[in-house]
Picture 1 (cartoon, chains in turn blue, orange):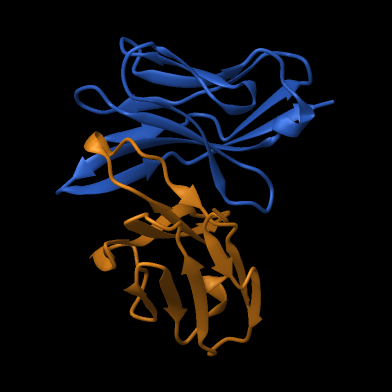
Picture 2 (cartoon, one colour):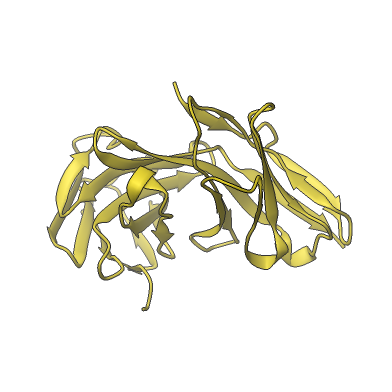
Length: 115
Length: 116
């Protein structure tokens, strides 16, 4: 089955350090891939997406993600973490299935930025 | 645009009572999704609609759950009768379809349901 996986339930990083939240995919062909963020007591919010073209995608709040076809990964990165980046992050795989839009979400990774 | 609107934001009810959650999608969006989020099970897709028609309800846990979309601007998720294990945050999301499915979903703020 086509899917995305987030191997880490939680990532801790010190404020000011670079952060990486991992996502791997198991998808045939060239996938579209998304990242969403969920702040406490809020709905999911779109961060960025990879469709085609440049493998480095830039998104909101200084986040970026690198699409790596050989490693089937789409890791989310930020050069310098802020305490306010502490949230739940979801990788997602959108596609057309049976003529309709479907999205499969990863299990989520909790990012904790330590002051 | 005000985004996806959900009501109520919080609902506390007693076991056995009927609960109705409401959602207003973003104008012009033709897809509407209902999700449930818990610590134990994470984010689960319950049902989704396209042009007000239910497409896939395989995620609806039991017959106690039902969802309707009478028009393009309103949807309800009903639980009758409610049980404590239904306690969760319920999200509504909407989107439009593009080639390849590359459009993102927009989520509402959620309804936190507590069933005592």
